[in-house]
Image (cartoon, rainbow, N blue to C red):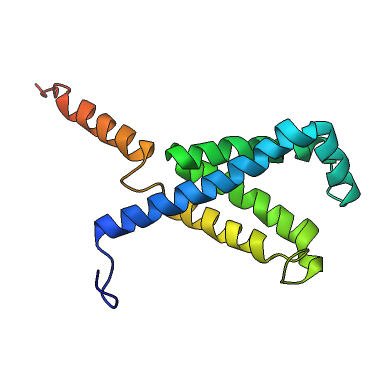
Length: 153
């Protein structure tokens, strides 16, 4: 690995896989906590206390996006869609809850901003070579190339 040269395609794809899996684990854990530990009613109550609008609707939406979006990132399945949904939830968390707490934790937005950035990056780049998205795209391309081509008369 050369420190001042651009990364090779293999290095970029490995970096995307590491980012995807770690961010996916974080989101799946937080979504699982909302779904299976606090419960949707508990999360909705907490969201309401934080001033999040339509808490009874946003709580289940956030919990499901975090849990299933996190699992999707781990697998690299529908990475761009999952990344987008997760970025939207983090943008909401940043603007509605954490911004008023300043930059630094425990109440600030630094952690949420990092997750927003990672989710946005995955939305832009996709899952990379080491993902189910890449495997499905490869199979789709192979299937198309194996179809007989119709000849014009």
